[in-house]
Length: 229
Image (cartoon, rainbow, N blue to C red):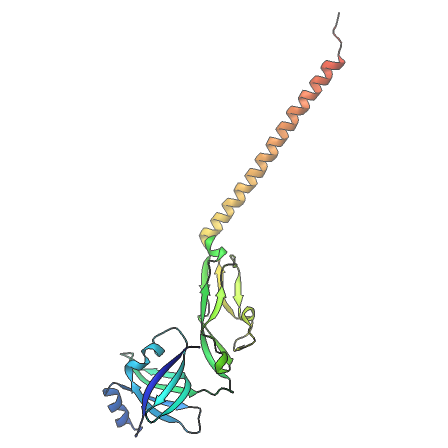
């Protein structure tokens, strides 16, 4: 999984006045959990743009002034209810030998057969929560849509992987190809055309058989009858 580095400074005070002063200075107050003690720090607001305002999942390297570094993931974030400005971020420290739960985006690729025939792609889950060691965390969970026909569904049980565990039931639907009204009309028309074609072919074959039979009988009569004197 890709990683983003956040350069921060330890916070001397965690009171409301100090926190407000940090925000006014363009800093975001943060806390790193998961270690022996929580680490309170702050970082420039712009440093979080590639981490927060993206559909992708990332791990984070928190570099604190003085040489300390921590591997972490974003755990929680608070936004201003009116301006949507970031108010506070919580991180959780990663350890190489400890599994972590994380939401991973689902990436779809390929042209579905069902969509080509008029079906509609429905995405039920854009992210899936998994549990894995940090080294096994994927950037995406990919699904190939090409073989999916109208009515087909992709379940979590179809995506099982040895490197990570899904925190969803196996019958959870991730995406599906729904039947569209246009697809139904086209299918009915195709069926009707097929039936008419079969009936026409049968009628033609019957006519040909009758004609051939008639010719054979006339020929036989002509051969057996003798001319009258």
